Length: 581
Image 1 (tube, rainbow, N blue to C red):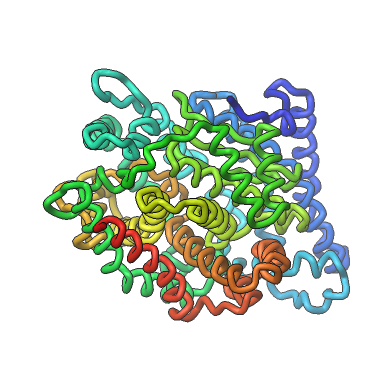
Image 2: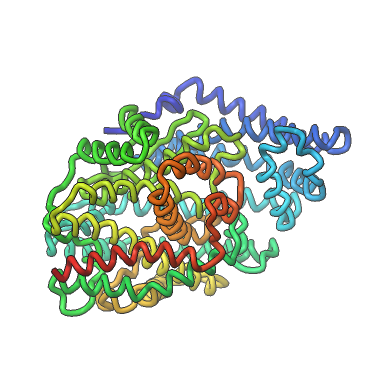
């Protein structure tokens, strides 16, 4: 089964594809004429023209880029898609000078003077964000130079990591399998399979670790250099600006996560004892199934679970999931050359989404489908926004996905009376929570450490050492220090983007924010359902703090994060009780 991309283009030779490329070229010429309007035209007319051109470019380039990136994600050796994306990037780089000049033009304009104009009003948040970011701009020539050089620096290093990990052959029990396949064996019922897969995975990384370490080192060095040149006060500032988020919110959340590490340690030690380990839990058993629900799921069974669970929340959400399955918006199964992991690519210009997964039948895979469909539902809600309001910031990106995961887990639990089955469902959910709180904390600590060393080259040995230290700090006594995972930096694509640094804490934000929202849903289901879509719609048009305030939540205070972590602690207590029983 493969996803259907025909609504984007029917192929690289589709006449519509070339026609859209020509439209982009024409729009870029019009866009580059914007600076000529600054002196001749009324300020409002210039801003409206900017919005119109950006909206048209957003629709076309999202479609073109998506078709190429989606084609490449299921076949990383697809050179045509790489060439096309490089060509599109080069074309858009031609707008750099006009963008810089417009940002400077907008910098000192009081937009409140134009709030009687509906178009300005609908795009005010994005325009204000441009004004805020304008103080970090370089000269026009410098911005153009960096945009061009980036294509042969950080962007190329990122593609290299993706290519090497996607095509990496793993030798497992005298046969060759892919990296996603060997990583999926961490969920196997057989203890020997899990342990052998762990060693096979680590051994495979040795074939590419030096090159990938160079890629990560050079990407982070580029970020540090550019942050310094632009005048950011620290490495967090550009991420927080891009995230529409205050440092107080990040600090409150991270502090609460650190406070709750001991409870996760207790869970991991109890799981280690349950599995027969004398010491703490080895990394290769983090995802070991427990309980007696040995069943694996067919794709059709997973589909039914997700749709029925979503329907228990609302018919609208259930219908969305059914539509995604029925119309082949999902590419479900692993295959050679396909990217590992899972993602959702929203296509609001079509009111659609495309979802990639590597489904092998585990209950965790069922949760992953629910997670990605949550992203897709979020995309459907914001598709009614203006094109400049189609992208939500990183922290709010996980809101709907975590919420949908929680719906599926609670729906499954509501139909289970047997303790052994209840243990497995609840423990699998807790596995995910542990990853998003504790493992994310380790990745945050690791990336923070990498940036502190990024004034020079960082070797693979140093990266492995830093990752092990970060895991020890985050997991504490919960993991066996003799069996950690020194290569978690190598297989996580989020580290390899110069424009998306610290793409780890947003998952923790999403989980805890989603848990907090689910708690509010249980308090008043009818009222919540009416307001939830409004919140999702707002995620692209307001700060993180203001979005939370729409549900009477203050995310700058530690109290909220503790209240969400308390919900997870209840699951920890229940899982420990069932493990000991």
